[in-house]
Image (tube, rainbow, N blue to C red; front, top):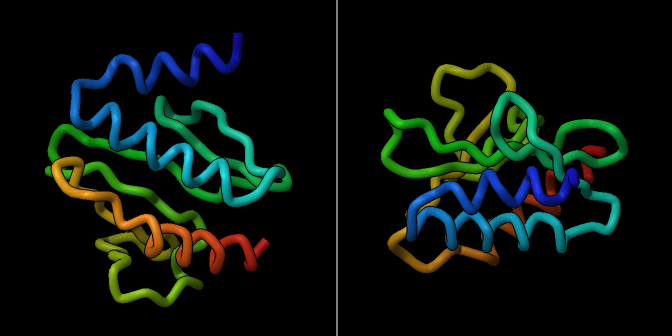
Length: 115
C-alpha cells in the first residue's frame, strides 16, 4: 500500500517531469540499501537511519524540479543553491536534458557521509 502511494505521486505528473523524477528516485534509492522513501509535506522524502536525507520538489512557481538536501549547509558543491534557506540546499534538474547522474551521485555520497 505504502509503495503504491509513493508511486501515485510520480504517476500523477506530466511528462517529461514524471520520467525525470522517477529516474532521480531510482538514483537516490540505489545509493544505499538503508535509504527508504515516504511522502512528507506532499512530496517524496528520502530517509536514512530514521532521518530525512533529501526531498524531491516541484513547485508551480519554479521552472525546474529540484532535490532539496536537508544537510545542505554542510555540502560544498557550486551547483547547489541555498536560496533564502539557512540549512538546506537544492540542486535544480532540467527534465528536458540528460540527468547529471554523476553529479547527483557525488552529492548524495557526500550527504550520506553526514549520517
